[in-house]
Length: 486
Image (cartoon, rainbow, N blue to C red; front, side, top):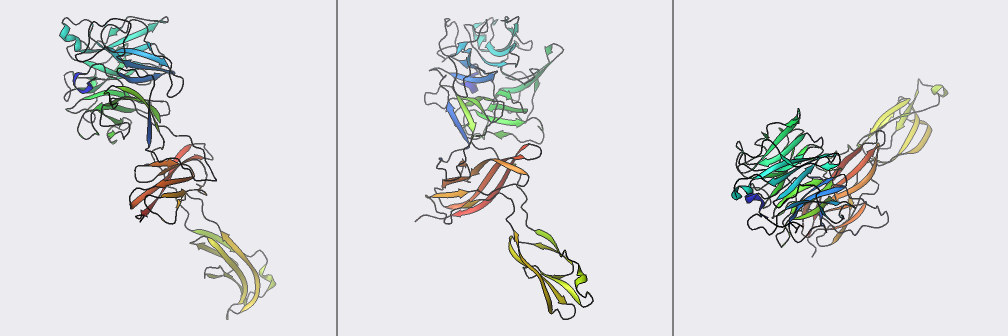
């Protein structure tokens, strides 16, 4: 299906990522293969025809498919074998679904329908369809947004949204979580060129006049497949230059649309083929998307999951580098003549302090022998050795990256973070970013660098605040140099 040029029935996008569960093996180094940050799986519900635009609502997936249906084909897109329809399947787990069924009611017809958006109450469906009242067959390629309400447990007759039917195409509906904000794509007047993303707000019982979302999103190229996530991030696909290839998925944080930067999503979600129709789960860490990357050039639905969170903006804990103490003698100085004698502290690092108390800051961890003497004021001669003991300063709580002594390419190197700690937090999960586009997880891991070079290794952790219970991200980094393995 050629989405960027003919706009058959396209759909809704949304993006997100999820943490991978991990089992910590404290005895052995993990031989888990290095991986990209995002893993994808093609769903088995795909057919031999086009399947795309997944939307999950209340444990049910809606999607668009051109698989053969029970009704005959009256009209079809040029070059398309079958028309598209709206299907649904019950979700068993992240990648397994029940046998897909056609959406009930009169939504599906002999023409193209697809790219549906469903509100949380499951009583409002907005979808794309060919105009049913077109006076000429050639006009049936125009797309229209239809709304279908469920009243008394029955889906009513679909009705076109009032602003459609003006000779332009309207497609790819995406509803915000409250069901009151609608994003869609259109080539209506006011577009920057091709298809643009528009927004309409539902107030006083109707959808308001659509507004172009602006130049930060829309260009002279095609911007299609809008979607809005629960954290108010707008996703869409575009064939503009600067992407990986074909239709690429972009994201913009609408919480701060002026300062936030437009981001093109990373591989393997985006590819050199058409990538579109992304929908996240409630965690914002995993979900579904559509792509034509299959060698048969068919659109198919994929599940994606992030194996390593993004630690770019994670906090780097401040490591304690001074260790300050106050030493004092608990006995009374009345035992000796303070006119001629005085306490003298030898603090074990070359520092000597006189007085009943001694305040001192060490710059290194270690064991220091503390010697308290009573000496003559004038000569400094030892009068009496009061006490002597070892003062131990342990390593501060911190994130620690430890690795093999010899760093050679094409050889599995050991990386370890055991003993890492953050004051006031409990570490829940640990992740490794090796600086060569590969990732892993766990306290002990192995990694192979294929070429020599200088790499920045990042240890990222998910930790829970012991007081508030809030989960936060932390990181530490270390630069290493890998030599050729001759």
